[in-house]
Length: 430
Image 1 (tube, rainbow, N blue to C red):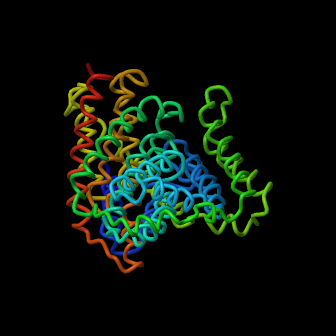
Image 2: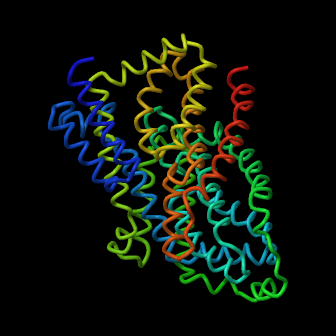
Image 3: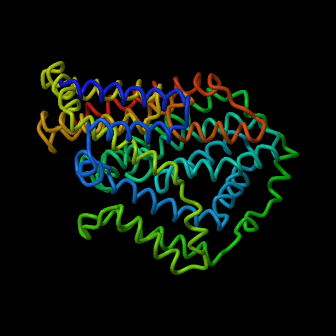
């Protein structure tokens, strides 16, 4: 590799380290790294803003933007509070039954929306319900973060790494449903069983408090019924368009932006209110990250790494798949899975072509997705949803420590990734 390539690697690793250690804000680290890459001519404006393979992936940016607006409007209706109170009453105040219902709701919502947004909406209500039932809130919050990561892995829009993988691999919403959803259903069932064992000391039943929770009226949580039905109608249309991509030929990013536009135009929600719900720092972070990774593509670093991996595995698809699955889980346990997948996706694209292209080689995309999504559960910093939950807990004066989360997360990750191994062998490698 050239001197410029090595300098690019040093810049990228420096920015990545700052992101992982949170020494400075991750947006500042990503933008700073992107700026340096442009400054040293590792990439240029043409490649950074307009290249399909080495620039900002605008499909990812606008898909996230559209879904953030839709979910922001949905948040105003109170539907998530309604679901949480309904779950508590449905469980009749039984702690484990309550956890199962909350986790199923969290996983299901994360598959359709975004896992970070889902935990932001579910966590405050979890505090309310746990306080009413005199239950320790930490186990429920930890489990919800993990359920959001597991459930989000099932679909294209559920977890940001999946959006990156879909865009780079040319995969559709239906591809994720067919290949990821069956495995995630099994992983979620296994996870619920683990929760029974890992959090057993938290399931203390109080009959008096259970009777009080039964008196809550979940319908009072709905703040705007008209807006709720309008939002659900638009969300249903957006999801239908995702599924019908092979027929309609509209990219998910286009569908999400159209849905957001229709929702804002057809409701009483103002443009300012809709835009205020967008997590702009997240979108800017993605943009900076894409520019840095694009610079590695432009300088030949990505190509060199992929060639080295192909040589090391000698073109053996099964070995490459298992290495990618477990390696992704291990790395995602240490650093946020979003920058990891953004870095690995161009490498995997090369490996897919070296292992039979979009036919048999496509299994490598699913190995990357499963490893990164499930590996994010291993530690408190492995996924964005984990960080958000710990922040919410700290603000509510019930802090969750790094190791309190991680000692559960490591077990969950090892077990759920191990469950995926026979799935890969039976479906793709056997």
